[in-house]
Length: 302
Image (cartoon, rainbow, N blue to C red; front, side, top):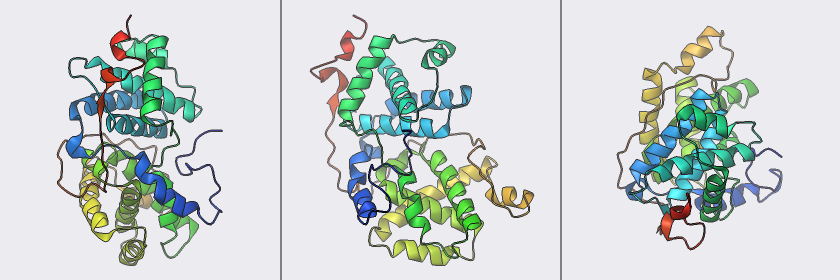
């Protein structure tokens, strides 16, 4: 079955403890805080994923999942500075894993040939095993998309066309926000809530204040973290507006009918600034990739 980012748990959404379980598990699916991250390795790996997305017309959710794997891997493993090619190998391997999870027919060999480099199948397999180990085989990532349905229940009026437009704009914002390095400091649920609040402010300014208050009143949400994330999200939306991704123009052009905006391409940029905010209680310990006892990358070309 194809993995759905909105429903990462194997249990049914109708089960009473589903939402509680989702919030309880989200910290296990986070990347490293921005202040402790190897920015160069992440930039190189993410850049390659985005190249694949646009060059191969790749499903944006496959790219999103692959970058999530990269961030989670880098939270636990260090890429040797003397081996910058490992970042490319990491990107290729995470892209391959994400494609398998989404049941995609993406051709990794074709993409590698287009980019002018080729890792053999055995090397990619070794790296995939390293990624799987670092992620504790938790491939059904809990991401901000996993919380959209929950927070949408706070919006009123709950008319399907309005909820559809709100979700579509928030989804587009989340895809763009993943390249913002500061977002790694926040839990997926906080990022989801912030994206929806931002979308409501853009699309439905009259309902926006009450929606924000309702979301902030949830016992799952820390108001201060929501405020801090909102500041960062505001910068992301500013860039989107400058790039021409204005949802108000889209809605006006379709006579007020909500449209799906995921297909619209907004150029991606990655800030490497960091902020000194709370890190959600995470205690991250990293090891170098070439210090792992099995599947040494130093042997990749043996």
